[in-house]
Amino acid sequence: MFVRSTVLAFVVGTSMAFAPSGQTRSNTQLQMSQMDDRRSFVTKTGSAAAAAALATATTTVAPQAASAAASTQWTAVDLPFTDTLYDIDFDTENHGYLVGSRGSFAETNDGGVTWEARSFSNLDAEEEVTYRFTVSSFTEGEGWVLGKPTLMLHTKDSGKTWERIPLSPKLPGEPTSITCLGPGKAEMTTSSGAIYVTENAGRNWKAQVKETIDATLNRISSSGVSGASYFTGNIINQVRDNDGAYLAVSSRGNFFLTWEPGNDFWIPHNRGTPRRIQNMGFVDGDIKKGVWMTLNGGKLLICNDSTSLSADTFDFKEANIKTGGYGLTDVAWRNKDEVWAVGGSNTMYISKDGGKNFAFDKSANNIPGNLYNVKFFKEFGNKGFALGSNGLLLRYTG
Image (cartoon, rainbow, N blue to C red; front, top):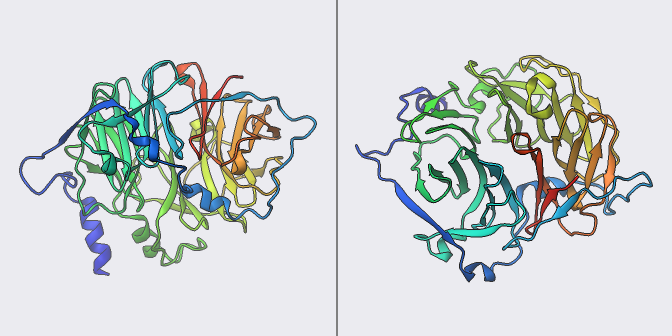
């Protein structure tokens, strides 16, 4: 299969995979400026990718708060736009960025209480609004942002100026995640399962995996993993733990894959349930503490044991959570006992026993839309945020 060999040659070839064809890379310097009124014409965004998964829910009635439902512990934050939000990150306790669809980009200097819209001064309104910023990662003033159509931005001065990083058209798949690892260093993944590391601010990238996921699966088509044979799709919901291990879900949700630093290939795993996987992640961001999985129909499974990513099976146990059939899009641990889950129709659930039992939280009960992401920043006072459609940002107030 010559197509496979071409992809493989790109992945395992020289670390200059992302360098431009010429001898000198030409980067674009972008200066951040305050947002003008160009965003005033932008109306409510279309559905995010997670909304498609939520469409599989079987019920049309939102779950009602039980008598023992948790009191509201989240407060809505006013934003200068009403577009779908995709990610949030901080490089200090007070300074951070928020990214979303239709060019939405905002900055905070008070820990997320208030936000100001930002734009790039050398991009006109019509051009910038076509981008969907999906991922942001910041560490001590260094930051990276990914966008669609394919766009990578890098800053060394806490967002005062930005450099546009050119990416090779031969890149296998689209960039899906990037993690800032320190000055000039970052790790990027793609929708085809490629993993790259740069140590010079994106000038060169070194491949960490020897072949793409579809090449691996087709090579081991007798592995017994349901849906893996002749796989030609992409992976979604890639998540990285604190030590660099990854979980990824196939685009159809019929199996998942794992990778750890030092491995040459991704390892596929059966999902162990007839329901499709909607999302996966690490318990408290650490593979040593376990793995969680959400399924279509609002199911949540948790494996609390220290898990080997090379294991054939995972000892998942179903959490007691009554969602009324609405899908769960994300789960996050605030501490070892307090766990939050979010999903369709802006539903929120809290567990006080490490994820065994959940109660409904009515913080966003009267707000239309869907929640897609919930994050806690333990390094910055354990502050928390939940992100959703229609410009919805909730701040944890406890």
